[in-house]
Amino acid sequence: MSFIVFGPGISDHLTLNQALSPSAMPSQPQAVVPTNSTRRVQDTDEDHSGHDAWREELQGEMADGAAPRTSAIGAYESVRHVQKELGPVQFAEQIMTSPVLSLMPDAPISEFRALITRRKIGLVPLIDAQKRLVGIVTKGDLTRQRVRYTDLAPRPVSTIATPNVLTATTNTNIRELARVLLARDIRGLPIVNEAGEVVGVVTRGDILRALVNYAPLELWL
Image (cartoon, rainbow, N blue to C red; front, side, top):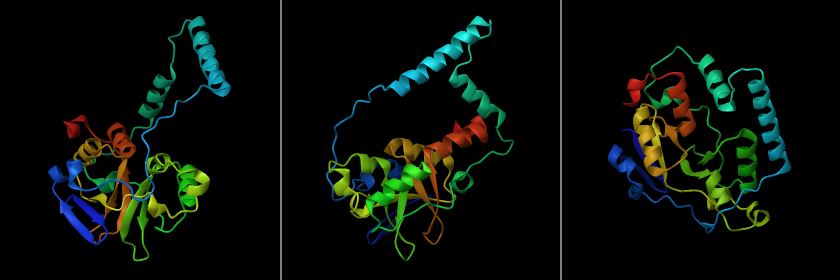
């Protein structure tokens, strides 16, 4: 099977249609109440200085008679030069990030925040002493909390985690993964082996890199 839900006392295999349905399993974090409020990002002096430097570079290129080279074009050209000649890729195990950074359920939330900040990741599986997947916590789970961080930091990370976790197997097709991530509006999925152990994580970024670096267009049609 391609998709499995792990949770307290459950290990259910799902079809693709079930995995695509957000109602197939509960997905809300426990304990701390989430909020729907939004925060407006204010411009800073540092942001303005960055914009000014970009404008000066652009004006210089135009003065030299060259076509403006935007940061987007530069990024595209950088990716184009490092494209790999391998492929096509088809399965989760070919693009997943491994080994997996994980935490114990009783780890403090402060440790979770330090981990995602230091390693620049957005989700962390929770694994118990028996190496069983018992939850997943994301950056969004943390930012939605209405409790002050000083009060939140010492609490167990399991209090803001989602206990029932949708996972994929190593032989899950990448197109199926992409469809599920999009339909459920989630950041990524843990990848499990035949024993149910977490062996990797596939995020939206992993799929996008596979599309850019490896896969022919036909894979996505």
